[in-house]
Length: 278
Image (cartoon, rainbow, N blue to C red; front, side, top):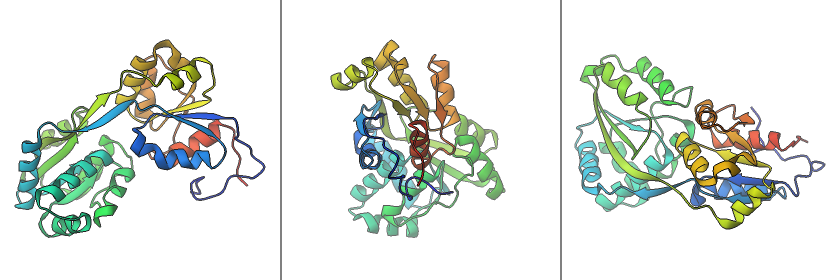
């Protein structure tokens, strides 16, 4: 499917004067922001959560050694943040450069499965590709994908690198199938509690046309951060799961991305702003 990410907007379509709020961590929002800014869109950023290193570094190191020593059959990544946290630490632990870290994994590591396409792309800097990517980019989709390739769950050793919080759907499903399942915190996800004053002023003034929300954790943090002002913008959610989280918090969602990817989310924001293709 063609995307606004690889096709130019119509020169006749002016988005100048429109404002979009990106709520991802700032270092992860740079590329998305630039895509809108080239169209004349005013882009504001207000991270809903902050990504921090795990406080259990020794546990993470021990888990990485178990992978390198062939004690794990499958490694599970549920986010791009998890990929970066794990491989950055692996590079430090074994004194490796980025690509050498990927080569080390190929020689010593386990098969890799990811929850979504974006998570799989985070492996690219290390020269790696996931072995399993589900058709539906949610935990339930990964369970279905694993059911297609794993014939004897009790014989398989799984290691899931995850955030300090999140759903337990995957863990419960794997344990129910008899898999030898272990979870290790790769990074911490912490709510941002104080909004940028300029962003809050723009929100209260009704200047933000569309805002994006990219996870259930972010949904909760945004509602806590903005209070009743959260209703003064139109929200576009990255997935039905995230949209449901917003709705349960009493916030309506104008649009849900067709796929749980940033590309699809950007497309949905573009459509919500009234953009047209050339």
